[in-house]
Length: 108
Image 1 (spheres, helix red, strand yellow):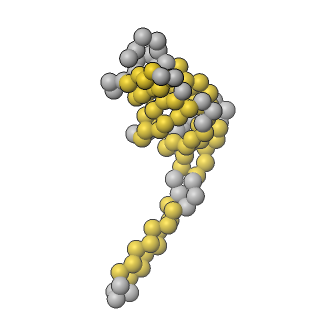
Image 2 (cartoon, helix red, strand yellow):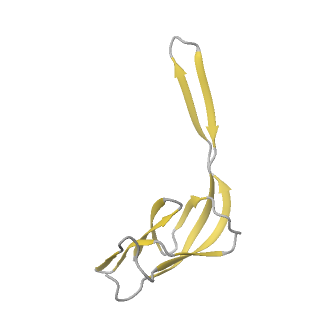
Image 3 (cartoon, one colour):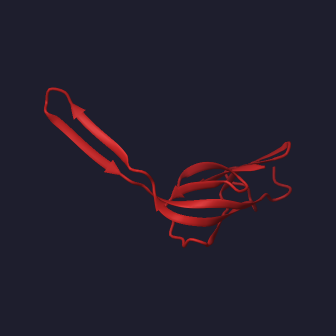
């Protein structure tokens, strides 16, 4: 079973016990979050598609930690102009682990 959820303006395909990182959320490590923006869910041979979300369906995730991703370097260079610019960026993320996927029965 897997589900496609929407968190922070991005979509993620998740299954039970998956660990994934999302844009920083104001949550404490060790807590839980209930994500009810489920776009699609597949369970065995049946597929449930929301319009835009599945009513009554949700994904429960445990908050593992808050962290920063590895640095991404943006290097800009213009030839024959003696122009160079090096910029680094680290994104703040929240790491979540899927505990449970609940799909409302009778929704198709």
